[in-house]
Image (cartoon, rainbow, N blue to C red):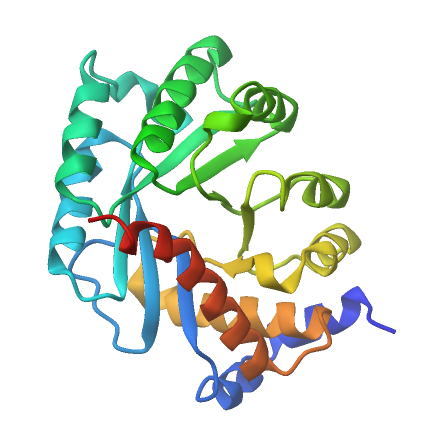
Length: 261
């Protein structure tokens, strides 16, 4: 029977990660690395912005056109002070010029101020993503009730796919939104607790992504090793098979921007 103690042992045993790393297909569904962060070991990576000052990095990544590194522009709910009054027109212009670009990181955070303003900026970006048919990378902390209300209201005009970054909602929520709103659930290294284990084991394997959320290239592979190894263990899957499944999942997310001409 799977137990949290095995997760803890696995995460402490870095030699295991070294052994299996040669078999793993590495994908990072959500990070904040700079455009110069090259790593040939990474088979697919998505860079997410948090404020307009980051968008120039996203443009550089999008213009590299290497079919492995992708980017998203957005305004994170922690950085609303950076919002310019004409941010919507700027976003639309950049996204139109870069059809391989996504929208993110956007969303709501209960523990940061001015929820009404967060809602206003989030909905504006959601509408842009829907109009231009771009995937979104969603930040949600303690606000899934509000997110669900918005999704229901805009159900027929939502973006084509939603990546729930560092998903921390309930297992029941996974069942509610995976198919209905075409949601993929992105996980970093799970904690050795029953809540994380249940959440991951409840997520359909064809909806799982892994991420680092890192700004530091030096810890990207270690974090991905630990995340994929733990998720494979929770799902009682071979690590190489799990990494292949996750790779196919991220390719489906990216296919939405690959199809835009």
